[in-house]
Structures are given as structure tokens and as C-alpha cells.
Figure (cartoon, rainbow, N blue to C red):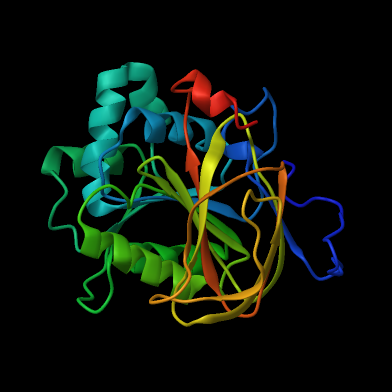
Length: 276
């Protein structure tokens, strides 16, 4: 599915060790007969399913091996499916529904149980919904990639909790991508990364944010304002409101960081298109 790509060159940085990412699979519908993406899970979190998130869900749903739904998100998924009609009700059936089950409506739980969804009650006040879902994905399915839908656009403390869960999970999965609130977010570990962006649906805005610790040295290519060994830290430089310049972005970082781009279904205005 184009996610693991052949090596290309950094400027002044060897690429043999670079992790490579491509996001095209998020923005296109699968072809008829297209195989599922091995080792890939979708996790649906309890935030508003806006039109962009609904579009992304429809793109990736049939591509992934497993869908894990936080219990509160099940109500939103059911409403979206119900609004779309009987075909969607039959299609959007999660593999697993997990959480403390205190927020799922009885009729929603019954619907998914009858459709074969596994219902897991997990009572753990020390972990949030995303951490519970990621544990299920890792322990039960051994997934290597996780696509998170939702988790942005609601309460800020919830958003920070989700970013913390992603940060803690960065060594357990090859790739964890969070989609929501017109943004794509990914935690990149220390090292070299080669990112193939989808310019039809990403940008022009992007950002590189230090999380967890100061980034002592950061080198980038492919951005309007590249970094050339500068440190990133709160109280100092944070690369917010940067812009994509090229279709391939390279990042070489001494510490983990947060990489984000804006995402969209359709162009909002002609000004956006001028950045391609």
C-alpha cells in the first residue's frame, strides 16, 4: 500500500537507517480486491465524527485488519452509521469495543454484540481510553501500525492525554498516526525519518513540536523553514506554523518529537492550492 518505500537521499545525512512513511492510504478508497494492510489496526476515539473524520474512516475501514472502538466512541459510530443508512450500519462494525462501558448506550451495545463485536470491560482508572485500546491492539493482535481517528477537537486535557499515550507507545509500534480536528499527528522517535506527504490532502501548514524533552539538534529538508541543527524546546524555538515545500520531508532528530500537518478533504480556497 505504498507505506514502506525505497530509500531516497537526505541532504548531508545517510538514509540507510531512516524510517519511511507515506500517508496516501489515508486519503484514497481501496481498489476492488485490494488486500488488507497487514499488522494495521484502526482505533476510534470518543470525539465528534465530523465530515473529514467520516471520510477518513471510510477510506481506511476496509484496509485494516482490526478495528478497536473506545466505548464512548461506539455511540458516535452508531449514529454516523445510522445517519448514512442500512449499508453503513452493516459495514461499520468494530472488531472490539473496550473500556469501562459506562458511557455506551444499551441499544448500541446490543447492536454491536449481535453483529459479532467483542465487548471487553476494562476497569483501570490509571489509563485513559486510548491507552486501553492500544493495550488491546498490542496484546490481542500484535499490530505494528495504528491509525487513531478522533481524539482532537474536544477537551484540551484529553488531547494532551492522547499525545502522552502516543508518546509512551512509540517504542511498541512502528507507526501511530492520530487523525482529527483537521490535523494529522505522529510521534517520531530519535533518529532519521523520510516522510512522503500527500499534497492533495495535506498542508500547506505543518509543525514540529518538542514533547517529553528538549530536542538538542534537529535537521530537516522539504519545509519552507528548515532546521539546521537548532534545538527545539518550550521557552525557546518551537517550529509551529511551518509549511510543506516538497513532497518528501526528511527529519533527523536527536530526541523524540511531534510531527503534524494540516489535512483536508477538499481545498478550501485558491490560496491553499498556491502552495503546491
